[in-house]
Image 1 (cartoon, rainbow, N blue to C red):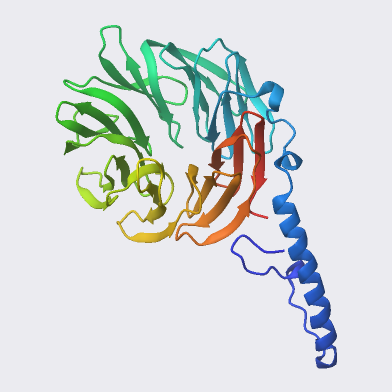
Image 2 (cartoon, rainbow, N blue to C red):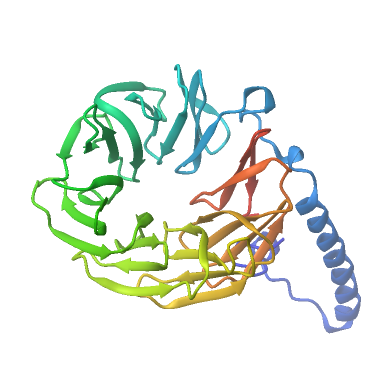
Length: 374
């Protein structure tokens, strides 16, 4: 059995010392055992995903329309029910809803749920509680960080947008309306940092705030560019994906580094955890793919060719899980060293790598939980 850092784990925590006369026999025995364990591990890693389905998670008859990681657990939003599951697969909270386009986001403290472009926010908690909050407009976007700050973008009836930040109990803490431009998305970091991505006639503008003040702390203008998505890395650095590059930004709004796609286009990305990852492809119809990981200071941690078309990425503190086409997935280190491959079911189209080293594979047939720490 190998530990998560790929170092052999002594049986019972002891290192056994053997008499020299028995070295050859012991070595032969260990070799046979090692081969058997290797064969067993390969068979287990390739067995059908249905064999790994955990009791309590959604099956085909009860498949949710939208999934999101919630710490080590999972949030699920369906048309008539929202659910929050623990890491062990236990249903810890649920509520009946009536959603047309269900969406959910999550953290270790809560799951947040909404009907896209309809008013209102729902929240479920690990202790079984359920809360709701009315909103002054239709919810177009939401995000929740690990301290429980919930960021919500609302579309008002007059066509303008407003940004709200709530605490874990859905109490409003911060409100902001752009004087010009339109809010695309917004995210928080820690207990007070906020960034809002707006687009106007000149391009994208990133606005930086502290939620205890209405005064803008900094801004970054990106003329002629659109920010597709962004998030905060663990150390507070902001990683943003535009149509032409991956940008790392400091809290003062200054660009720390920029990774150009060099004529390729962005296909997938992961912007959370300890590093940023970008997958680019040459050619509009899909050519050669390249995966690149970048440290918060701009250093290239790793770069490699993508063996297949990339469907989804999910990053953690120092790991990157990639779902490829053809029912293949690989867990990499932040330097893109391969750790292990796993073959999910045909319908899987989302992956979520959790902080405890486990991963959720989600698709129309349900959810599979895979433990990569073993």
